[in-house]
Amino acid sequence: MRIFLTGATGFLGQELLKALFSRNHQLTALARSPEKAAAFPSGVQIVKGKVEDPAGYREALAGQDVFVHIAALVKMWVRDRRQFDLINVESLQNAIRASTAAGIPRFVYASSFMALGPSDGPALTEADARRTDHFHNDYERTKHLGDLAARKLQGEGHSLYILYPGVIYGPGNLTDGNIVAKSLIPFLNGKMPFGLALKEWSYSYVQDVVNGFIKVIEEQPASKRYILGGDNQTGESFYQALYEVSGKKPPVMNIPMPMASLAGYGEYLLAQLFGREPSMLTHEVARIYQHAWAYDSSLAIRELNYKITPLKEGLAKMVKWLREAGYVR
Image (cartoon, rainbow, N blue to C red; front, side, top):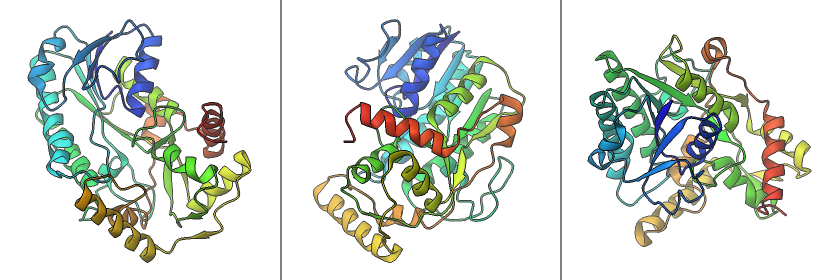
């Protein structure tokens, strides 16, 4: 198949690109920076351009069989908040319309568990309504708006699938999308003795998510929206599993949420004043941590033969990779 891919230099996008290439698909990848695409296999065609500028990649859509849209602004803060709307909502809508105009039979969109909102109760399914009427940060807000826009275009006859990965973790590019690995590096190196009392989260091993995308890309499954979640575990269970595979004991204490929020406000203000990204969290992220984010992947398990790697097994693979790559002593 001929596949056009955005977001291929990110965590999930790069792993998906490698998997698709190994399956002998003809790949064209949109890259804002060709330097970041230097590690792509030599057979991948690279189109220099921006996802927010469809005119720059429109010619490359001719003859494609599938448009896979992974690109997103995954940040806890940027100086110009309008960038979230531009990339996560407007660029998505433009990409879907450009794909349809080019006659591409299918469009596969990587949404996010955050588009569905926190669970704070039974694990959410694709059929459930959002349980909160507010958003914690611009990323969550714009992923929700992007999801609504994609569903509306589905209803208007555009042929597209919407996939909702959980908290993706595992070996791969250490971008902001690989938040678990990035946050564990200082902890495993003994530089972060404190933790947060996390509620239940859905931890999706990256190769499970990649395999779910491949099923949708290569086949035509019955449903149009799938949660590609993972092992729903509490923070206590997470750190216990990490201890069993790494030997690193759980944090000696959890930072109280009010204190975490206060520290987050400080990080946010410094970012606003000096234009540098927050190093750990913002007050908005602290509020996210006060909720449970658990999801039910039963539909994907039934229709895509989706597999969920147990958290302990996935963490063992990730920790092994972090050590072999030199990120952890």
